[in-house]
Image (cartoon, rainbow, N blue to C red; front, side, top):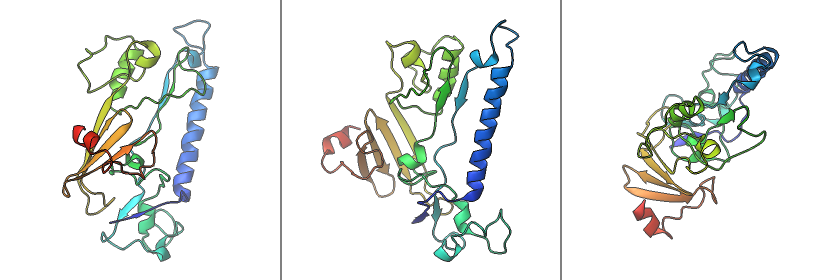
Length: 239
């Protein structure tokens, strides 16, 4: 079993995010103020694509039984390995809260899979625009090839699918399905061994040891609170 951080209150993590945000702002300011030597009359901000993403999930869980149990008396970020103090604080080892998304890193619920992906592509992306298409980190390879004007893989190749295709080639679509798997972790995050398969609006979870499944409509139920496998055994079996 795992302890789960439900409130984003780690001050060290907050400082890291503030530093990251400031750094990104500084990069954009430099690009806006710098001439592009290859394109006279243009600034680098007009000819540079920015992509912001992250590693999967945020570490929000901690396995009971691995070292000192994470008890309430230790849930104080003033006492941990990066701040002054003498007590090692397990609570600081799972520093992020993904709530209301479920669980976090190495779990295959949305809290462990859903990450930011921001693309600034001058002349292509519109400010404030969003897409419901889903993507995988491996898709960045085909995406960058698409942005650079390189030849695309055949449609039968699905290891990497360009997420820019809906914008640049409306006749084609982005990824239709995706697979994820993490083995169990007796320590660290404490996750079970679960495989996940996403197709369209639905995601199937297969518990490798228990030999059972859960099924969620990710569009209608993004926080995975309503397992529809009992009511949709046909769809669960198909997936």
